[in-house]
Amino acid sequence: MLKILKQKNSISFVMLLLLITKILGFLKLRTIAQLFGVSHELDIFWAAFTIPDMLFMLLVAGSINAAIIPTLSEIFRKEGKDSLDKFFNHLMVIVSSLLIFIALILFIFTPQLATLLTESEVLQDFLKFGQRVGSGDFDLFVSLTRIMMLSPVLLGISGLVTGYLQVRKQFFVTSLAPLFYNLAMILGSVVLVVGFNMGVEGVAISAVLGSLVHLLVQIPKFKEYFDSPIEFGISPLIEGLKHNKTMQAVRLALPRTIAVLGEQINTIVNTLISFSLAAGALSAYKFAVSLHLFPINIIGSAIAQVALPSLEESCEDEDKYCKVLNSSIQKALFLVLPIVSILIILRLPIVRLAYGVGAFDWRATILTAWCLLLLSFSVIGQSIDQILLRAFYALKETWLPLIAVTVGIIVNIGFAIFLTNFLSHYYDWRPILEQMFMQIKDSNGAGLGPVLGSFIKDSVRWATTRGTSDLAVGGLSLSLSISYLVEMVVLSLLLNLKVKVITWKKTIIPSLMKLMNAFLMSLGMYFVFKLFDFQLDTTRTISIVILTVVTTAYGFLSYFVGCKVFGIQEVNLLDEIIEDIKKNLFKRKKRKVDVQEGI
Image (cartoon, rainbow, N blue to C red; front, side, top):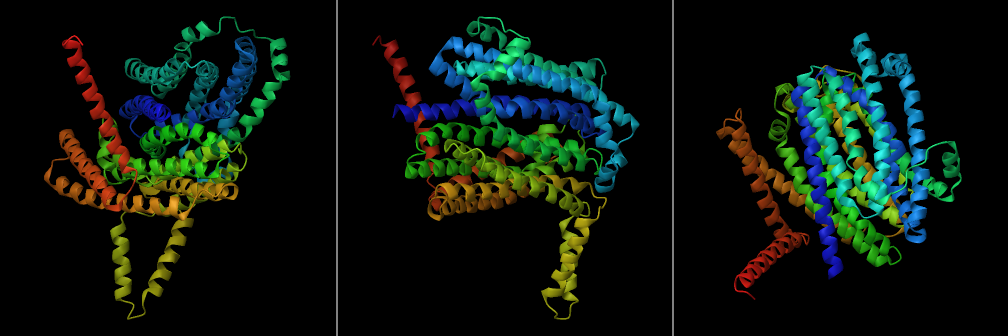
């Protein structure tokens, strides 16, 4: 019973920390949106941010949880503090030296890299990339990239400190680091852009300041546990490379690093394609990505993190392993599906409440809401993917999931190209339906065959030519959603090759029941939304808030009733939470009375 209670507390604690961090990250993007909207200048910033971000993700972020923390924890548990500190010194020298070396190389050759990205004949012919990047953009791209090249070095060092402190069970200060990173970026952007009129260079400098604060906030606690100075130099570097645990960490990190590389390839491809679209397309896509990551980072990540220890404990008992995995999947679906429905139906008011300030105009709202609609479906795939990946790691299998990641990359690249072309001809679905009805009417009884043939012919033409519609950016969102859903299916099939865990009775049928319930919830929310939308003046913020709150309240109520009707077991989680709150309140009141009576 105590173990179950601790697990519930773990999920709640992790979700709370992720929620606070995500809110600050959201406010950071809102600030940037208020300052720049979805401008071409901001597009250049996001493109320049890709290179230093990829450096950090590949060398540090991808290996912290997969290799660094497990290796440090094993040394601390088996060999004690002295061995832990000695190996950490080796690790710090190796990683920081590698980061500084690569950052310097990239800093020196940034102009050549920018030329490759902006003036390549292949990219111009294939993506029409060069049509939107002039000499002024080239100089800005180089400047921003060089400014932010210091960020991965600072974050890499800070990430190692985070790993060390987490091994020593100091989770509070490591949770503060990303909070202060976001705060520094928010304040820095406002001061430098508004106060000093620095443009997007001010945001780039704020990213570096945020990385520095991320490190500094952890230093006092780090010094309490690591009481000897870190020794840098050639000798510690060579000694660290010869350490047997170094190669162990590399072996553990390599599969995850390759997976992160795949994710970065998706990011780069989408960034490049976005430059062949309308101005502001990349920024609208980025803002929508941030919104759709909200439930993934809070719900999916929390359930996946807490599920991993249970999966590891039960990996030798197939029945128990299957029960834990399917329970985690069903909990994730139960929590994320209503969020997906809300994102789909309330996408416009959500975007307006989130970003609708300053330079973020109506066009920016439409583009961002369109991207959010098509990204909503990836919330399901990404949330379940995190759980399935943990299931592989519990079985000590880190290479097999790379097959699914590779398939996801190929699907994303292919669909991103064809769907951006296809949607570049799209403006509204109603004329398309009207045309199909007219063709059927004029077909003189020929049936649907010629109409469908004409539609397929038009679709192929649309997918292979570029139109002028701003809605083309939705192709990036839809391709990402499709790729994660495909990756989810492939991961499930591969996992079933090792252990028969995905079944009709325990996985598919309960999932379909939840999907049906979420669909009915969405239908009801749509009619409520339209009813209040006609009655309220949605040019006012208070009306948008009322519309959002009322529609969301109806949605959750209908989802709860639907769970009871369909017999969805996870609805008991809500009952348990309510009962726990009641019990805690009753205990506190009783304790207060006992204290007053002197008991």
